[in-house]
Image (cartoon, rainbow, N blue to C red; front, top):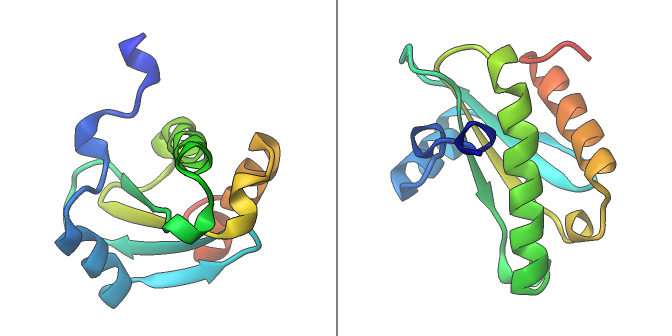
Length: 118
């Protein structure tokens, strides 16, 4: 079961890491999320973080959306370049979206940012 989880080193957890993506990276806007990306000058595998404000929905809804996005990232992580940091800011519509709709939008935003082939 451990192979089907996103390892802790693959997650952005510190405030400074999220700030670096916001200040130095680029963002792509969609209906369910805003995807921020930054190519860090490191050779480590891609890393990922999710921001879900309280206004997005209840704690149950926010956590479900976070889990879904972590899974989407985990599956696509081998396709992403080393050193890439991604931050997803959830929008209110994301908590009502299906897993397929979230996956489709995430792939479209990553492709628009130039990190995945659509």
